[in-house]
Image (cartoon, rainbow, N blue to C red; front, top):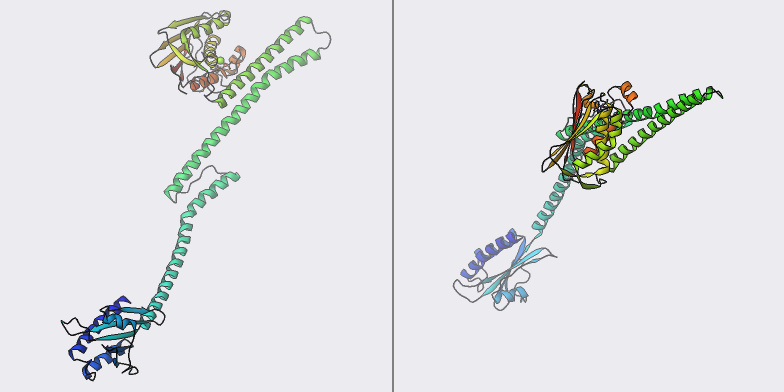
Length: 433
Ligand SMILES: Nc1ncnc2c1ncn2[C@@H]1O[C@H](COP(=O)(O)OP(=O)(O)OP(=O)(O)O)[C@@H](O)[C@H]1O
Ligand SMILES: [Mg+2]
């Protein structure tokens, strides 16, 4: 619209100059100028009206208003040197006023009022609007369709992963997921597979644990049953001595059962209680271990094993006394249990500014190399028959290791079969929650 207006305005200006040059206002009969005016109105499907200073219409290309007086706001404003260009939005036409004056003169001798139709512009606009709408509609549809199929393409491998995971969930014979379509799905399937194998390991160890527990708990009960049965079957005439002996055995088995249950409870408590339940106090490790050795002296004497304490550096550390007593007692007890007559168990204490080391070594039977990696497992015993006669469930070292780990420490075992075993416990002197 603006382009059209400025186009017509400049043409009008040229013709206005001609009007003034031909003194058309005085003599509107000039063929040249009339032809120009005619051409302009034809070209733009419009009407040109020329008005003189008396507001008289000198020329109307429609030849209807010639000689009449023209009182229009635009014309009057143009005489006041305000040229206007107005678009009538209702009737779709543009009205332009152009002043007619002699070159170099300020005076306005007349006004040329040009109205041209804006229909062609409106038509073009409408056509363009339809086209734009079509283009937008087609591209949006295309984009939506492409997005739909694109997303299907992207989602498909992930669907596959879900499908495979579902298969595993449903219990099909499959324990790995592998969808290498995308790097992401490959990583995802790898993680899932690792998780599954971890769960399988956990499940296996849980099953083994349950089997072990049941077995261990059943053993004393079976013994008690056998003992009680034989007493019952002998009826009234059981010698008092035999009766007493059997009863003592029964009590022993009951004690054994209680011991196992207590150990299990300790382990379970430590498993779920994690570390925040540690009641740590700063303790002098030398006297702490000495107390334990003193308490175990009767057992050691019975087994004819000597207990020795060696303090390289006196050291204190923050420990949970009750739990740590359990850990160290287990080690010393083992040293006594799996020893030979006349042997010894030595507790060696050392430390630096950061760590405290407690070493429990013995001159006992030792642990075979292939058994060494397993001794901290629950219920693991090297020689079941031997251990049975000595008495033990294989929970001691598992408890010890749990306690040491709770103290953020480490435990290791070294052994030579037939010569002896050394357990080394190392914990930080300051407890790290
Ligand atoms: N100092 C040691 N010398 C030789 N063998 C040992 C020693 N300490 C542990 N073992 C072996 O490791 C096994 C596991 O020890 P652990 O203390 O866990 O169980 P346990 O002593 O059999 O039973 P308990 O639960 O009563 O302690 C023992 O059965 C024994 O075979
Ligand atoms: Mg033990």
